[in-house]
Image 1 (tube, rainbow, N blue to C red):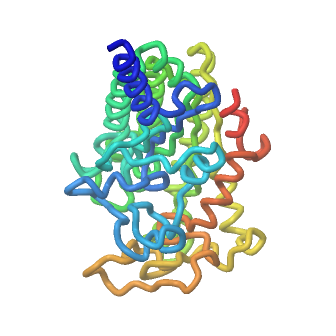
Image 2 (cartoon, rainbow, N blue to C red):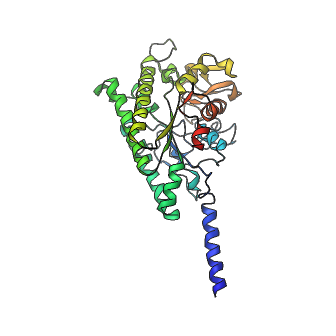
Image 3 (cartoon, helix red, strand yellow):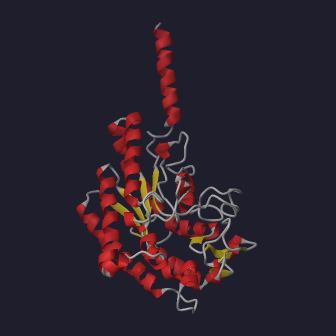
Length: 362
């Protein structure tokens, strides 16, 4: 009887280790991902009335050979970061099935903003809802590991954010009247305020190490160039101004959080400069085209018609790796790879105060 009982306990422990095989290893660092289509791995595939999806060809063709819901021809930045950190691809939260949640979860949702009112209710997972989903995951881990081990795991984890793009782009590309009620400074303050509220919530639940991607030169995306009503095909400067205001405010907010929250560590990636450089000097970085998208229609192939049924005829390039942008608002796998490398091991001119390689080791 004693032998069979010990055998039973051994079986239970084996099953637990299969579900959470590396959770107690001191080197195991989970990755939790928050944001929009820049980071999405397929959550919108499972939203019935999603504002946008990329679960059709030619998305995904370069690497996966089929569409996964990522807004690129292949992998996105979190996929490369996971690889460098010796983690598997981090699964989208809404994807059915049993996942190794102690490796992390991807909550990012295409078209999502930091503000709930940026998109129609139920069409995206806005940032506040992503934070609620994170708490659900925390409870699931806690049920398996107990509170002490969960706290330890979450304190080692990396929390990666890319949010705000849609809050600033939507008012210029939809019938939104959001900007009419606020000054630029007030509006940016709302976006940063919502973001810092979520950071504090995660901190309260044990999170200590955070990564933030700055706004890029939003007005220079092919989609915004194509939508520019002045007809010159130049950047939409008014939108880029919001990028600059956001980045300045975010840097200040992070410094403040560092003084307020004991043990809070962060990395800030200067996406604005890195992308601007590649738009202006594309050939230096191995791209033939820096302003025109690989897939889309209209000026700069900027209109977001890539692969859509019933959309006006779209054009598709022969080789996405010749292009910086895959569609009017998103990068090619090659560009994502370059930026992920900068985030992982770049020097303090592009990512500070830590690069991700260092932050994972902290």
